[in-house]
Image 1 (tube, rainbow over the protein chains, first blue to last red):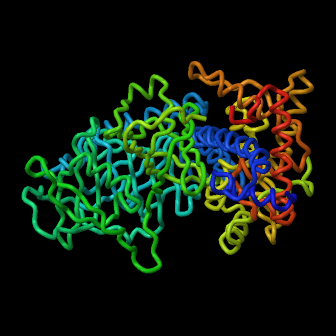
Image 2: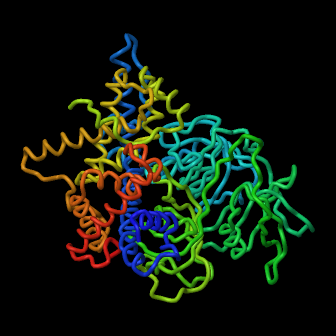
Amino acid sequence: MTPERIDALLQQALDTGEIPSEATPEERQELAPLLANARALRLNAARVEAEARASLPTARARFQRHLAAQAAAALPTPAAPPKQRLMARLFGGRAVAFATSAAAVAVVAVLAIVVLQPFSSPDTASALEVDHYVQLEAVVSEAADGSVIVQAPDIGDVQVALGPETAVTAAGGQPAASLKRGDAVLVSGVVTAKRAIAATNVAVSPNGDTVPEGGERKLPLLKDLRPGLEGTIALLSLSPDGRQGRVVLAAGAERLLVAVDPASMDQFLSAPDGGVGARVRVVAGANLPKGVFRLEVIERDAPPAGKERPQFENVRGVVVGRNMNVLQVRTDKGVIPVVVLPQTSIRFGESGLTAEDVRAGESVAGWEVSITGNAEGPLGRTVAASIIVVLGKAPARPAAQ
Amino acid sequence: MSETEEEHHGLPALPVSDAEALARRAVQRDPAAWEQLFELHYRHVFAFVRYRLRSAEEAEDIASQVFEVAYSRAPRFDYRGVPIEGWLIGIARNLVRDHIKKLGRRGIDDEFDDSLELSEPDQSEAIGLRRDLLAAMRELTGDQREVIEQRFLLDKSVAETAVAMNRSEDAVKNLQRRALAAMQRALVSAGYQGGGAA
């Protein structure tokens, strides 16, 4: 056992989360505690990352005030007002700023009702229902501190509230600079009012032209299966109880609302190429009610050459530990921390688990899960979860670490 | 507080063309560039500071100061070949040091404070683990602590850490093993038989 060999074995273990099979028993004995320490450090790093994200709005407002003050001091003419919330500008306190952040969702909900026109199409309204979890692709049309308005195909203007917990990242897990007009975004969150979403996760790409154009329009609901019906998922939504799933299917020039069987939706969400942007085939299923279908993933639609579409990461693995709202998940790329956000949607499927179990302290250790969310930088292996699907039946215990 | 070599001894650069263009604009005190820098680096700076201070609120305050100080010094920043994140981390290191000295003068030992103000009930195990991890880090040499920070707290790759620490990748791998082993010894002496996985 040379130092070089043990260094290399440790590095392999850190990369994969497992001690390499070629390690001797003595080497395993040396490596095991080192790997455990590294896991513990990464878990704490994920918690610090969550704190950093929570503090970001207040710190950003402070820095913008600083920049504005410096600009005002440097120029003979009054500087442009800083981009920040009115209450934060008036009082500047952390508590007030957080309060305004927390209130943003509620305010946006009210604003969305008062300012924006109601849906003109009942078919379209059923694709975006209040309290439903939703994922949709859109283009930023207006950006302000704390919220943005996006233009979504088939729906039109949607107000997206960004809270302190919202994970916003660009390609490669880098933190996104402020959202700006023309950015393509993939938004997930909970619908708080007609055309208003409290976002948990936003993926950003500068290529707004990757999102299909088209404002509000009526969408027919698919009632009878057409043989060979294929298309790309442009939006998906799930009811709070998880029993109703719908997608908007772009099939050539046609756009359809499709009701999806919950079990099929779980499979779709946990497939490597699942989620918005996936190309799917719509198929019938045994014992499904009329007008409810299953989805089969064909592939993920390739973006135009040289263009990146915004997309979330999809991670699959086994939960090996839980520390409050951070799960440790063993994947084929090693053990990664997964931060469960306050509004993360969790689908328990056939697992037999319930939200009450989790709240009561169920560690979820040993369960296989599929997670969709943002892989965040600088801690690029931390995933801020948008939706978690618990797969399969109860594991053999004990498996917790 | 002075700008020292230490301030330039930090984290690796972003992709060169983008990073240098952004740095050029930052030197000119372009507000849009500084807003972009803030979005890119705030959480990293916060994480660096957080591991040294008592609370998230203090970390937020110091991390915010880092950007204010950096903006004030922007015309003095030499962007040629110097990662701007390393420069920011250097400023953070000095601000933390000043902050801890100030607290020390008031009789408060704040560095690696063992309290973690969590609102959730029944988190004694999590609190204890973090406290002991931080206590174990106190036992490390400067290089060992830096490699732990880079690799596991700031989640840098071996290659990035090698650049930041001006060492070979093999040296980083060796150093990280020795650092984890030193932490293990400290944790075992604190009662964690299995190390940090307790």
